[in-house]
Amino acid sequence: MTSYKIAVLAGDGIGPEVVGMAVRVLKTISKKTGVGFEMEEAPVGGCACDATGNPLPEATLKLAKKSDAVLLGAVGGPKWEGLDYSVRPERALLGLRAELGLFANLRPAVVFSPLVEASTLKREVIEGIDLMVVRELTGDVYFGKPRGVEILPNGEKRGTNTMVYTTKEIERIAKVAFELARKRKKKLCSVDKANVLECTELWRFVVSQVHKNYADVLLSHMYVDNCAMQLIRNPKQFDVVVTTNLFGDILSDEAAMLTGSIGMLPSASLNEKSLGLYEPIHGSAPDIAGKNLANPIATILSVGMMLDYSFGLKNEAGLIKKAVENVLNKGLRTADIYTQGFQKVGTKEMGEAICKEL
Ligand code: NAD
Image 1: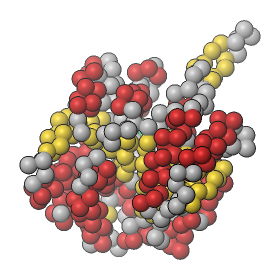
Image 2 (image 1 turned 120 degrees about the vertical axis):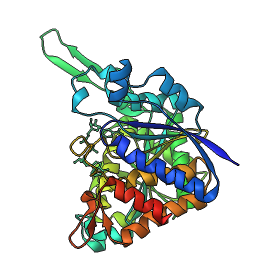
Image 3 (image 1 turned 30 degrees about the horizontal axis):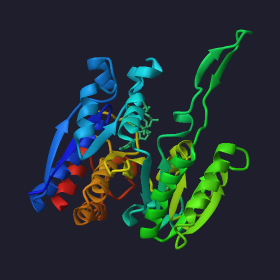
């Protein structure tokens, strides 16, 4: 029997609640199909910091490195906000991305038809949206040097972060995006701010160079401010969007809201060997943690992406998507996607219903 090793890093806040449901889905898939999943848990984020003083303990990193895929919940929360940046829970994410070489973040935004009414936008604008934001994950202002806050001779403080991209970094993310576009509607929109930022002028140039190997894909370029506007005005114009770390961080959350709730959106972060880290795009949602209110669908769909991208189990991934759709069609809604007339359920009930559907 084929068996895959999965590191399960639930993290903080709603992380353990939503990951718990995703693990149940994996166990259900295993029972149904005979594919084995060896799951091992390890602490990450604030809880790891409390236990060991390090948001990404050595043992957690070691486990992640020897696994075939990593399932992550979320990290962070008000309890750890006063800590030094070097030990903040969020540093664990940056550490995992850097150590595992996860440079490509794939964030699909798909509107499930039963949820069209849950979006704040009009039906005709969002019905049928199926786009993918490809965000570069290991460069840009999050990693560029110099960085930090210094005190100037006059006593004033100055904060600095540096936007940095090399040709190689742009080439490899562009290739991922072109390959994905090739398997979809063959349209790629590269988003930058080439009119004012030299770094993204290089981005535009390199993406255009890579395009020469993908003549079957239609490439367009868009400034990030325009893209933010177009995502609300006419999101259906997009198929695959590729962009920098900072712009992708913001645009993918905007794309999330098109679908009704941040609680619906999965993500995959891949390295060059297709080892992947799979996580919902939302954070630890401290405001609803421990209350059985969190929507587990983003994490469950992340497991679906894991089966597809890391294990090549397309069929099983499709089963998960279908089960989610069926449960939504039956009228079950967590609070974040609830509208009148539907059945309001908690995290557990939603997860169990999806397992039952499977
Ligand atoms: P958030 O995504 O945690 O929450 C934003 C809002 O969306 C909240 O109102 C929350 O209740 C709601 N929400 C989020 N996920 C939901 C779900 N599954 N179901 C229903 N509602 C949901 O973002 P935030 O409030 O800006 O950040 C909270 C903490 O999470 C911070 O410490 C932040 O640094 C951290 N964070 C972590 C990650 C990560 O681990 N990848 C990502 C973003 C934020």
